[in-house]
Structures are given as structure tokens and as C-alpha cells.
Image (cartoon, rainbow, N blue to C red; front, side, top):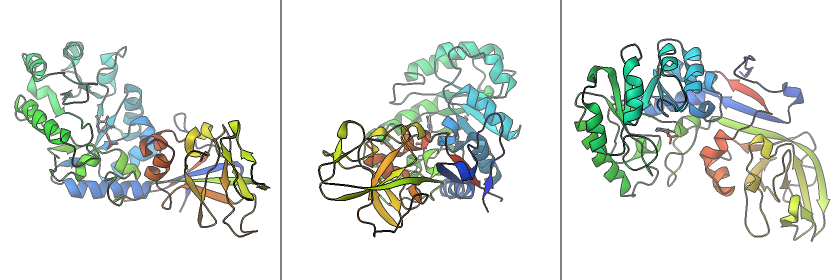
Length: 383
Ligand SMILES: *Cc1c(COP(=O)(O)O)cnc(C)c1O
């Protein structure tokens, strides 16, 4: 059964279905099933849920609640503002870690007020947290093992920072993989070795290293807690093999017009694609303002993404406009489609990984760009 999400201040269900140019359907039962698959794979380690960036575009509150209902009790957000939303959606029983740590400009007291655990990654952050450590939830520590982004930059820094810190107020030691989606990348084992040295400084403190793809590494670097995001939302954590996850997101867009153009006529801004044969085109009510990459359409130089219309794959052609894009439907039988019919842009048939790759980006980018102009429908999950 499909249900419209209730309108809330933090969540917009978009226009009414009948008026919507596009429909985004989010399958919360597939999301819950994906979490359970990962949780079974890593047991007895715990499986968390990463719900940053509006739960990868799917909607923070509905996604977090579905994960909680599936059994997830530990959540990761990127920013404190996302943490405040997650806390309001989940209540007191969930643990919530803030990946960006004690954010520059944010008040440590706000972390305490919402029981958000900062993932601390520098001596300065640790000093800012120290006066609040007793009142707040136990924090996490981030050891940089190769990203050069966040985290204690060296084992020496980490060791020095630990003097005088109450280990009982540290919930987790964590780090993050650089290229776990590539099984053969030697960086993986180098990071694991470095992480083991960081862990040794914190005997007895639970450890976490794995994102989605690392859950599928042969070395099984699960430790005590894994932190999948992408795979929960249907992204393929094993790019070299078939996707073991269920699709969560389905994006459909209406066809506004169908037209015929002659060889030599071009499509879209700057005439990037030219018809080589008599061509039939369908104009879709979906553009880059809805999160479609501007580069999703084929040009005369390179191919582009495909959408599914009347059961067949049809290439997007020409530059994607702000509100519209154009599919080449020449291969469909005459009369097979009419204005008002829908094209499937993302779904079981066309995954986010494929759509991202054909648009010159990655599936993560496609998901987190999902726009707000569609009607959003949620397929509920009830355990
Ligand atoms: C985003 C993120 C994750 C989740 O990564 P996926 O590849 O989406 O599973 C885990 N850990 C950290 C530190 C992250 O920033």
C-alpha cells in the first residue's frame, strides 16, 4: 500500500500526486530489508545506519524511523542540525553520532541538549568537549588512516590527546576507508593495519571502520560496529559484481510532448546532440533543478543515461535543462506512448549506480541530489 507522507516542518511531501510532474517513491520496507541483510552479514558486530544528507536524499525522518523499526539503534549524521532532526524523529532510545565532530561554530552545549555524540578528531575539539564530557553522551574518536580530511592526523597526536581523558566517556574509536569499493586496492590493508594500532591505544573501547563497501571486503573489517549508508538506500556496494541490495528509490517523470525531428536537427541548449536519422523525441518534465545531472544526456561526442519508457530503454539526448530533458524514443513502436505517460528514470530497471556512471558521476551524487519538486510517496515498513 502506498501512502502520502504527512507534511511536517522538516519534511515536504511535494505537490499533490495528480499535479506532480515527477513521482519519487521510496520503499521503506526495502530499506529495512537492506539493513537486515547487512546486519545478518556482520553479526555479531552491530550494524548502524548512516542517515546524513537527508538519508541520502530519501528523507531523514521516514528513513531513520524505518531503520529503527527494523532494529537499528545506532545512527550517524554528518551535521549537528541533522542530528537534532534525527533525535526528534527517533526519541531517546537511539544513539546518534555526528561525523563532522564538534562542528566549527557550533555550541558543545547543543550536542549535550540533544544527546548527540561528537566524533572528535583533533586536540582542539577534545579540549572544547572536555567541560561537557561528563554531561553529554560518550563521544567517539576519529583516527585518520588515509583520508586526510578529518580525524587525529597521527597516532602520536591521538596518544598525546588521550592523557587525562576518561576512557569511560569514549564510546567508539573509528576511521574511514579511502577506496573500500575496490577489493584489490592495497590501501585497504594499510588502513586496517594503522587502525589496529590506533585501537591498541584504546583497549576495551568499541571500534568501527567499515562503510557499505567494506562490509563486502574479504578481510571482513567489521570490528564492533559497521556504518553503512549507500547500500541501505539501494546503491551497489560491490561495483564489480551484481548489486546484492534491493532498490529503494523509484523516480518517474511524465512525458509532456512527443515530436519528430529530421536528421541534422539538434536537441537542447548549445546543440550538443544532433539527430543522425529521422528521430522521435519525448520531452520529460524533469530537469537539473530536480537533481538530474546536466550531463545526463548524450552529446555528439559521448553517450548518456537511459530511461525506461513503455518497457524499453531510451537514451536521454542533449543537455539536460533546468526543468526538462529529452529522450530519443525512435525505437518505440509508433503510438506506443502518449503525453501523460511516465518514464522510469530510477528504479529496479535502472539503478542509481548505472544512472550515475552514465551521467559522468556516481550513484551517491544522484541519490543525494534528489530534488524537492516531485511528489514523494513512501511505501511503509511495518515489522
Ligand atoms: C558517509 C560515511 C559513511 C557511509 O558510507 P557509505 O559508503 O555510504 O556506506 C560511513 N562513515 C563515514 C565516516 C562517512 O562519512
